[in-house]
Image (cartoon, rainbow, N blue to C red; front, side, top):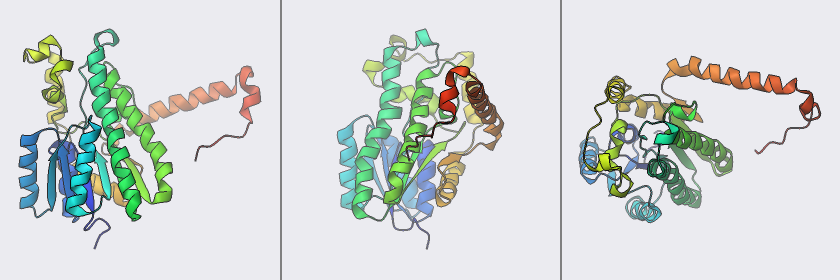
Length: 294
């Protein structure tokens, strides 16, 4: 019997894409699965699929930007399964591509509310429940390769994903004494509908063009659709999460071909430290004891 069998996972944005891929993979491990998603119709489809696969499943419609709705999911999970052992903060949206001056307050607010506050609300709600039963557990936050490297014309999206990586690193140390393992998933392109995120954008945060229902048929949008269509399958990502969590990995990567890209970034950072070491302004700091936070 594996370590996941009979335990309960709550997955935000779990009705499709990466969230549903993780749901299927965890269901195969014998976990009870709680799907929380804003799309009621997709939730019904996802629940039926999992039930056909023999998975114990509960689906709850939820907007991750609403803390009280997170609390509702928690209450229904406890009523049905008794405990929460794993949280997968998966729900996320892609920002409208645009330069600094063309990314307005509405775009920033929506992306931050979903990608950042949704993760915070989920963690604040579910982690205390894991601590209560004392059996330990798992916290998996879904970030992106954008959390490891800046993406031009995607400032809002990049900002939130960098934040998710940083919070995961912080919580990794904080929750370790409670036997709660933290992992952060950083995929590149996966076959999802993240490029169509505006379908769930609140009306009050949409532009006139978005509210009119006009479709973006630009060459950039067509290129993005092609890239996503050629992306990794959510099922593979789900199985990779099981593999990585089982191995107690903090950083979960799904696209090893990006390693060389990140190595360039790490080298640039290391080179910057080397330059700071050679600065006469910082000579007194060089040999000071490092203050660690963990």
